Amino acid sequence: MADTPWNDLPQPLRRVLDGTPAGVAVLDTALRYRYVNPALAAMNGVPAEEHLGRTIAELLPGIDPREDVLRAVLADGRPREITSSGHTRAGSPQEHRYWYGAYHRLETAGRPVGVVGVVLEVTAARRQQHELEQARARLALLDTAATRIGTTLDVDTTCGELAAFLVDHLADAATVELLPHPDSRHARTLPDGGRRLLRTAIAAKPALLEQVRQVGERGEYVDYRPDSAVPRCLAEGRPVIENLMTEADLRRTAPNPERIADYRAVGIHSGMVVPLTARGHRIGTVTLLRTDPSPGFDQDDAVAAQDLAVRAAIHLDNARRYSREHAVAVDLQRAMLAEPGSPHPDITVAFRYRPAGTSALIGGDWYETVALPDGRTVLAIGDVMGHGIEAAAHMSHYQAMLRAMALLEPNADRLLARMDGLAGDVHDYRPSTCLAVYAEPARGRYCFASAGHLPPAVVRPDGEVALLPVEPGPPLGTGQNGYAPSIVVLPPEHTLLLFTDGLVERRDEDIDRSLRRLTARRLPAGAGPERLLDAVLAGAPDPAEDDIALLAAAPARPRPGQLRSREVLTVLTGGRWKPLG
Image (cartoon, rainbow, N blue to C red; front, side):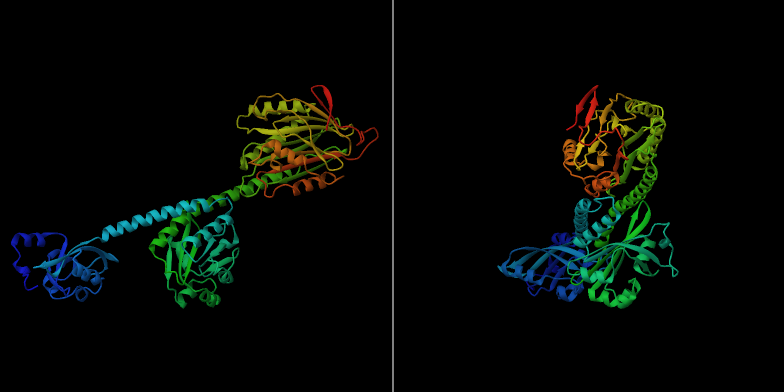
């Protein structure tokens, strides 16, 4: 480089090099600095004159000099671009810095004499690129999570889905723990100031699952000391990361210090606790664990886990709210259906009610019986449209209305017309289907009318099921009226079966096919109403897609003059008698 006196550069070129914001350096063939402009001196945090005669590695041991690339430029003369990283002596708030450099070979008289490099710091750009990539990754993760977490309104299922998803994407093992309901005795603060949570889900990589289960199982209450990670996470409302946990860390964090050996056996070295917060309230925590060879948790992991926890917490809160409403609605409906009216002694009546599974809202299924002064018994079954507490409350209105109006109306079609008119006068009444029957078992005579309800069925002594042709009118509460009576004569050994649509309907099936499936069943021969309904429910899907209400009625005992089972069942419709089946 003696042939290239850089201090004697032409002043215009020197001013360009000294004034450019890019760092410029000239290295000789031994890769020692021969010239450094002010921008590079500031970038490195070393005066320009202190660079001269020293290599990059000697001057800046905190960065990767990529000398192999620089020697390749000297060897073949082909320019190269590289990105290096690390720290210089210049102060910086950045945890890690990045530089982009372009290097060209310098030649004199056809022989290489050194390398010139132009360097720009790209830390901010790299950080922005990293943040953009992380944001895209988190969005993709959340998009996938949307299809796998919160598929039902069941709390335990949602917690299990969250734990399994975290193990698939962020952790080697994960647990989900919820704070007890405020009214629960477990919700009280522990004597030492710690917190008690209910472990609702646990998941782990297949190779770790058995070991993790030895540390704790789902369904148990877990007590945490006040200085451990879970109470701190709940108090602060942000993730708590504990990497490379020592024995003391484990003893403080572990709910059961006696199991420290078990934790060590699993190989846990890092943990992260993330709060589950919904609508401004803490509802629990998620704990993520990592074992070798997985790395410790970082802030990117914390952001991703918190994004998932926020979304899952909303699902969990919705599920909890639904569960409470569902429980209230079930209790309300059971209470209202627990004591239907008493029929006359000449007819035996049995009832069953089974709410749908927790993935569906409770409906407004109802039934009722009324003993009339003239010896007849009114049987009724119906289904209020809609779900939830309001539907359960409206069904009680229809029950009360039927009890009152049945004493005033002489037959089923007029009863439904009166109820439709009354419900229509009250504008906030939800419509309801209803099948009403005026039963005279001593004569084997049953008078039907239907307000949009499914047809009744009759069960013969051999267990065969047949539907009775009852013309449906509009549901109650629509104000459309128009109900046609149907009269059926049944021998005494036959049982009348009334049911709501939850027994037969399927979302992916035509209703006629669903009804044919019912009539294809063979129920226990000679069974009374109670045993018959048990058999009907035993063959229904559990859980069903909708609530199921059942009513079975049969003459209490044969009397002289009644029809016998060998006689033909007949139905009177439109003033004409027709044989059945």
